[in-house]
Length: 224
Image 1 (cartoon, one colour):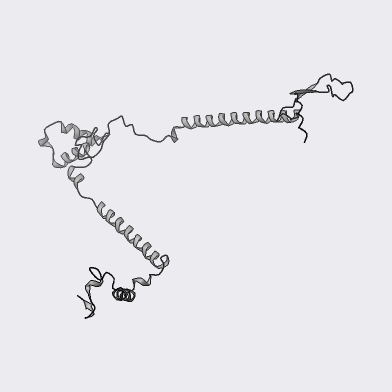
Image 2 (cartoon, rainbow, N blue to C red; image 1 turned 90 degrees about the vertical axis):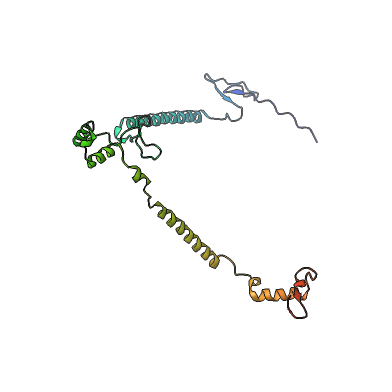
């Protein structure tokens, strides 16, 4: 077996129109073209130009899309009709809580003329205020009274109803599985089979000293 001859080295680049090494005088072109012979470089100039053109077109389209998106975002940011209302949590807020008798701000900020006159009357002696006016002044500062906040609600009915609903639904699912999913009940659960099994255990005198058969009177045929 003859050893393999080493592969001749490949020149990285050769000049088209140059030396063909066929024994003839090489013809030289005025403008020789170079083609690299390394792997993956066998591309024609037309293919190379096509790839460059497609790459440039892709980059231009990407820039145009980015510019369009940026302009649309800017237009939406300047459109105040689409901006949702937000709550400034740094400002005082009102809430009804049993553990906080005095909220940060009154319940009513904007007052009518009648409410403003009532607030002016509040600065005078309270003996001149009627019960209805005192209640109205209270509801200008607070929404609910402590009696209203402590009043029991009917939420427990919703909770109990939800619990019974899910229990009933679970029962229906179990009943459906018992009929259509589970296999038939084994015959070993039947009373006749258990009676025959008990009689067989007594006939075999299982654990006759201190166990099962020791509690059976074989002469009388009954349990001791």
